[in-house]
Image (tube, rainbow, N blue to C red; front, side, top):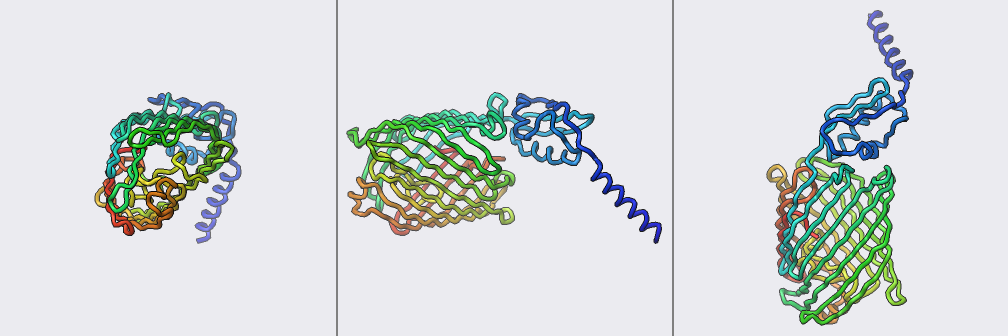
Amino acid sequence: MKNLIRLISITIIINLLTVFFVQADIIKEIKITGKTKTHKSAILRKLRMSEGQDLDPHDLPLVREKMLKISQVILKSISFNDGILTIEIEDKWSIFPIPMITQSGDYYTRGALIYENNFLGTLGTFAPAVGQTNSGFNGILYYQDEELFNDHIGTKILFMKRADLTKFKRREITRSIFETRYTTFTITPNYLWEKHVFKAGPIFVDKEVLSTNKQELAHKKFTALLFRHHLNDYHVYDFYQLGIITTYNLIAGMDGGKLITVHEGDVRWHKAIGDDFFDFMVYGYYVNDNSHLYPKLIGGQDGCRGYDRASTPVSQNLSLMFQYQKQLLNRTYLAPFYEWNTLRLIDPIAQIEDRKKLTENTLGLSFRYYFEKISIPALMLEYGRNIEDKSNHFNLNIGLSI
């Protein structure tokens, strides 16, 4: 018994000595090998590593974990010998054609997007898209790499040309119709800090609002400042993002001597319950102007499924959503939901409706099939019943929507 105790004690001492006296080695060279177009500099930015740093052999599992989180590549092997860190990878297929098909009431979109999430080997995202709505041509050119310049600084560039035809209805009766056409360009450099992303930059908008007989209701070209904050406190479970994700946008600019401010934000919380998911969302929008120029066209999206898509122009909106996604098979889910909305209609619509504010409840059911490895529904078919308006709303979406 004494010999056994002595042996255990010696083993513990040896392990402790190993932990305390193993010294970190300097990384003399980092080799990225394998079938890859991905630039070495892009990998190192994701790892927060560079040659000349110290690397403790006990930290190698952490490096492996960071590599596994890079969704654009497959990690084949990793080793650290004689000061040389060798990482063997293989690129995943990074270019995906994604349909953009939406039908919600009288609103529709038909188009496609090419999604490239390893643009020129930089691990950045490049996404051109074209489509046609019930109002006209839509086009998008999008690029984002939040670690383009170093491991904290990147940028986002967005060019969008869009046309929407809004049919505002109450009790299934059309009360107002107008068409919105706008072109927007924005560039927002960003700064990463832990789980936070801060973005700020200029936004240019050329917006025109027309009546059904093409009479101009409003037209404005303006430049403003856009500030955006994201909190990404989540982890990826298969294809779904679990945890808390928040977004806040502030747009501020001058219009004829008046400071226009637009506030928009949401908080989303996703929790796994076995193979099922519970979703909670709070969404808010506020602009200090009630004209045709700055409304949010709500409807057809999470939190506002008691309205047809882009059918309800508001200057203020607060939405709550509770949703439970029940797994049917693999990535197929059936999701009952409840939504609460309070909103303020823009003045031209409020004068027709004779009500500026609405507070309404919606009950509904959503059928969803998800892309593999991507938390975007490949197919979504939804039904929502607006209790107060006594109206039914159906929404079909295949792929992405804009």
